[in-house]
Image (cartoon, rainbow, N blue to C red; front, side):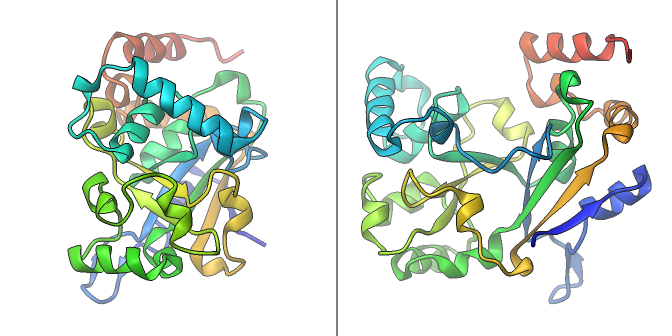
Length: 262
């Protein structure tokens, strides 16, 4: 069973958002978790590629090939496959990546964006990405240990895997890694974003996660508290206007802000 907190108040919510974030080694609050908010607590950690249906491995190859063919490469800071797949995910192409954030408040925002889902409980997933690195193949462990990092940049990952197919060749068993995207725009920077990806496009994160509760937990946001939490996040300036800079984000924030509760 997943360790689950169903919060009872705004104060309880704040407490659970920062659950288990104290690092005793340095006596500082430095969270080993990353967070993902979903509007409906029944939604699972499945990728946009998987939700397309069909054979994920074949679809991924076609999608990435055509994206690279038609996209403007000038948007990329470096012409390698990991920057390409990060760019594709960022612009809505179905990929094996999942979006996460280092900020629990940003995750809370994304669990409270769809007013049509306010009749359902929301959820925030938290993964201990530091501890989950123990499942990496040795070749990838060497890369992050050399850099004293817990995540990969595109350049770091390229040292071990020059193609996306190389990931699967490093281990007979599926594994998970975490990729920090380049700062493609203010949206990625403001959302404090990173991606998770499995070593193959078929295995889904929720099916792969170890059974040990030590690696993850989730926070349930009861539907009856959603309006209160949403309004308080807005007052704290955790809104689309900030997290999605530009006219689209501004319009989304204003539309929601002036929507009737009924």
